[in-house]
Structures are given as structure tokens and as C-alpha cells.
Length: 328
Image (cartoon, rainbow, N blue to C red; front, side, top):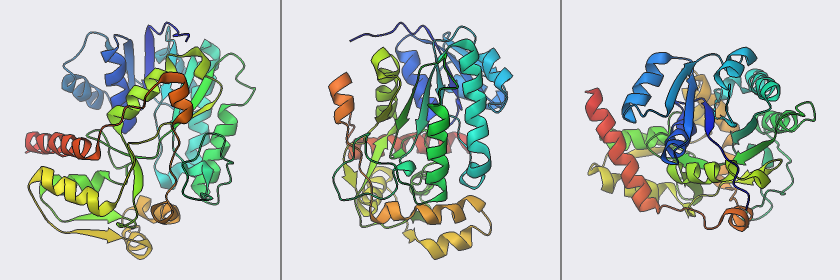
């Protein structure tokens, strides 16, 4: 297997859910890493949390400006595109952001790894885990925009850069923020407050623990033969919302009610928080969940790291509680 020699990487969207864990994994492997984000205080806070490692370089800029990305990625071997846009801005902002990143990468001849989700696949055919060549037939607005992103990303326009898309199911972990459906649920349980759970609580679904995802993503990014294609990043199996809540309560030692929220509740919340209204069309995934097959990954890179839900949720609750305690 050809491991390419990655000495330097840039992570766009450095302080988001996937950005933070990918940076931690790159640093663990001794790779000099540029954390790119909009706000310097946020980047500095993140660097302090990691103990201000010497291999971490902080760069601010606007991911929508090719010049900013170009400047930040000087001398880098790979760009991790972890920057995201809120659901309600996806149709207008996802493609312009992606094009800015690709323009910069193409000028530099730098490889790009884009982090994405499962929306372009559309509805499942049955309960079997799906492979990377499952037909993409999205029926939702967000799925369609994401499929457009994929076409733009792999377009022949960018002839000087090699690229890959890694696809994650729902994720959880200490770094997971508003972008994850489980984020607010686990925050509430950790704080001992009543919480809400988005969608159906009885149907088992796939979730990936973010530190596991980071290992897989970096592993693929270091392999030349992984470029030019899509990769699934599966979780450690499936789990129902009820079971997640049970494990999280056990870890936090607190037991306030957690209420499932469906289309009506989300539409009402959407009057105050625009993102909530946008989740409604994705609720089909909470009733007929898609599962990702990791066979292609295993063939290339070996066993899939799979932290058990019990351990992953316990670690997550502890990390959230220690953050909440510091904030007080």
C-alpha cells in the first residue's frame, strides 16, 4: 500500500465537529497542521485545549474566498474541507464555498478530502448496509444540493488536484455541535436538564463516534489509491434513541425527561430557530435509517475502529460535563 508522505495538512472549519477531531488525529501522527477558521479567539481557545502543540498553526480567513484558502494552504499536501453551512443556507452557500476551496486547491495542486453525509443517497431499498456505488437518487432539497456538490467537486475543471469525499452517518462525540442531531440531546442530559430527541426514538440507527471517524478519514487521506472516489465511514453498529438516552443518563448520573420531537414540534421550533424547520424533510432517515457498509474501507485499510456506544457515550458525557463545569 502506498502511503503518501503527508508532512503538512490544512483543516478548513477547524473548530467544527469533524474539524477538531481530524486535527487531533493529524497531530497524533506528527503531521504539521494548519487550523483555518473565521475567528481567532475561537481558534486560540481550541489550541489551548490541545495544549498549544508546536505543530499546530492557526490561520484566519473566509472559506468563501479562494485567495484566503490559497494563502493558508501554502506548502500543504492535503486540504481537509470540514467547513459546513447551516441547513437553511445550504441551497445558496454550499456550492460557492466548495468552488472557492477547489479553486485554491487547483491553483496549488493540493489534494482535497471533503467531509460529507449520506443525504445524496436518498431513500434506502432495504435494510442492508449500502456500499459506495449505491445509486444516488435524492428526493430532498438538501440531498439534491449535496449531489450537485459532488458533481462540482469531481468535475474535470479541477485537473491539477486529486480529491475524495468521505461520507459519515449521524455522528456524536465531545466535539459534536449543533450540526449533529444528538448534540443538543447529550448536552441537556449532561447538564441534568430536560432535553429533546429529534425523530423516532424506537428505531435503531447508525451513529459514528467522531474520534473513530477521524482515524478512518486520516487513514484514507494518507493513501494515494484512495483518491478519485467516495468512501463510507461507518459507525459501530446501530442503536435506538431510547438506548442512547439510557446510556447517557447512566453516564451523567442524572435523569430528566427527554421528549421526542417530530415534524410538528420542529416546525414550531423553526419559527424561532430556522434550522429546525429544515430538519423536517430529513426525518425519513429516523424512520428508515440508511446504514453504511465499510467493506471497501476494510479492503484498503483494515479493521474499522469501532468504539462501543457505551464507552463512546460515557466519554462524550464526561467531556461535556467538564466543559460545562469550566464555563460556570
